View 1 (tube, rainbow, N blue to C red):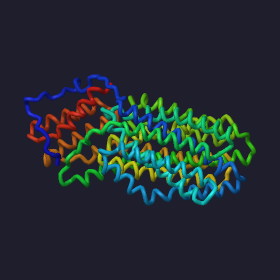
View 2: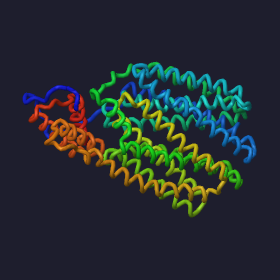
View 3: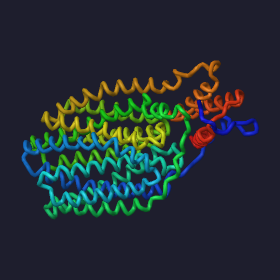
View 4: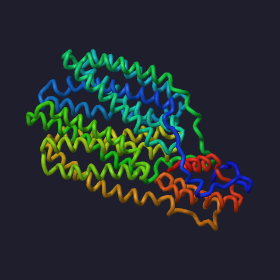
Length: 486
């Protein structure tokens, strides 16, 4: 049963459909979001310095067979922390919601310390422990980012725009950091110097994060005795579960493509600039995806963004498997970069909107573990199999094509999930009111404001006629979002 909010009495105006659909505007770039964007982007630049250092020490400094063995060891090690730390990172973020900025500061300082220590242990067994710590810090920061953004945006309608803006800045600053790291590594012929630079950049991120505003108090929705069951239902909705699986498949494709391409180019004695061209193309595609995602979100729901990314990547991989020219490789890298960010923006916004605020840390921690597993499986397959680029793309296409079909079907069925289980309004009026309200939220999430307005008005009128009390904050927030929807 809905919790006791305020009663929509006859003395309070009931929003009309036309009023709910009135166009509005909002500036989603708050000072807090701007500061966090810079902190996250500078940290991405530091990650680029770490990546360049590891590439020189782990991958390119030894023979292909030896590097394959080292990479396989590294991939196996990367999964270890998620088994132990995934249940700890998420709950800690949820537990200390008022201290998110200090969690960010601690993470950036810890990553700075690990990068500094790694510079002294590059060619020892301790290397794997430190690299493991950096990976954990990176993933923890990613989980924290996903949990922080909703609290830094005034309106959830702008989540895709906010996530995309953050990702665009991260791509630009991270790309600049990567270029600088390559230059520094080439000039100094050292794998340690880039790590020193990464240490400084992580500390800069910590300083910026310390200036984040104190987050707003999370709005708790009181469900009464049904709260645990309803929280589990929200975080395990069919659409969220299907979308997580779909994005895991995309991550598998990225891991298989990146590592398969790297070893294939080395075996065929391709020039180093070819791999660099693929990396640049991937970055350009990622940036393009972050530009297009907010535009597409104005017309389509988040699940359709993810479906478009999955289907587009499947078609591209199937087409490119027929040939292995340099142009095709660059084209696939571009589409893969775009699909990765396009799908990620859709997925993050979907979870941020549908999962309760109190569970964002747990949710994204669990999803990051799943995505990392998909990436590791794809990378391990490509590294161990040592296929040619064409065969690798054929395998990727063989996975993506059926995954695309299954996801499109699953998303279509999930969009109607909230409606098929609607109770009989004659037997349970309160349940009928809740059904209309959930349907309104459902249609608003799917980018259908007109249907959402109709369902919301039905919920308000039925509540008034039956004397049922509605959750004031949910109704008012939804009505305000619908007024601002084009």
